[in-house]
Length: 91
Image (cartoon, rainbow, N blue to C red; front, side, top):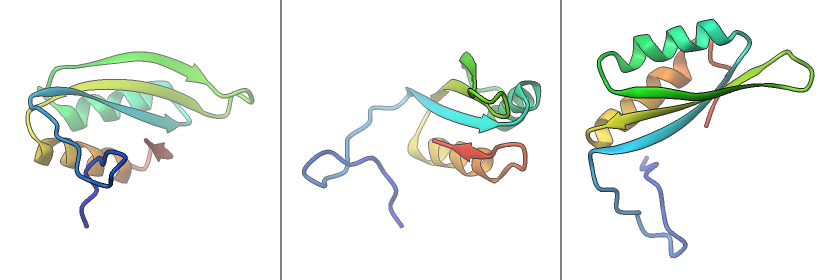
């Protein structure tokens, strides 16, 4: 399955690497989400742009920007983050 970004014509978007890529993580605990990010991205350059709690306070959302070197790394980070038990949703 090809999950690469597409433009409005259904063609694959061209991404010039290295590039900064943003992931949005949603989970129950900010510290645990930050630990997941650090463990998954390892030595890659990244920053957490902000933490936003849900209205109910049950969930927290983190915007994480990571410098990815190629599509394989971008996809690997996505898969590892999405599979982690502390990450409820990943966008």
